[in-house]
Image 1 (tube, rainbow, N blue to C red):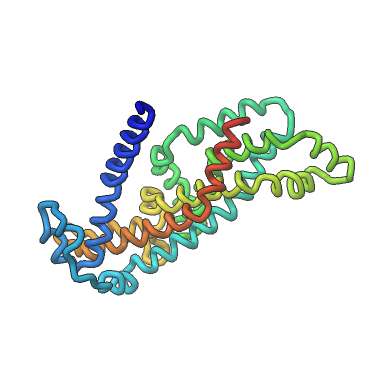
Image 2: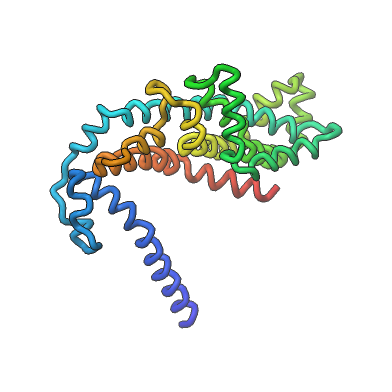
Length: 275
């Protein structure tokens, strides 16, 4: 009886915590379907705050004609480019750290680990000064470059690569494969979960970046979603219906991506943790 009671208590506690986390998201979604003038009309919090509304899609239609619409497309483009180029860079670096023995390999790996222990925002300002000197401000190249060498993605892939049997590599070498062939035909096909997990890391890093796009993408053609969303809130006025609609769009897109690839991500992290 005691284990059942304990299990029931944990289930109830988990449900309560889940509801507490979900309520702010529900409040944002509900207010995105209201005119901005009604955002605070139902405070203090009650059931009317969440369920008493006449839903309208006006905020979403207005969002398409605002800077947030274009900025969201820019975010999708920049994030996709970061994933494609970043996977090529990170997988190559991880292969070099996993497949070869050479002096200083441990030092290089230590630098990779250190790179993701230091918050990127801590180096964003000096790095942006370098990018200005290189004429990379207000370019998609400048927005993409910092995200392609992600230390956490390299670490994840390297740990996964270490679990690939050496016998497969030796057999490939005996069949005449060069090291690029070993990488292309042995390592990559066996590492799909890790590649998807690393791709999700690269995508989320780029999608939720705020400080770097704020420093580098300052014109209307290169502004990204989080920056455009913050620009909707002026000093003296903010259309909160529009702000909440933008927040919903910028939240739903990564949630869809994560939901689609979640099992691969969990598998990649679990497999890498065993190495």
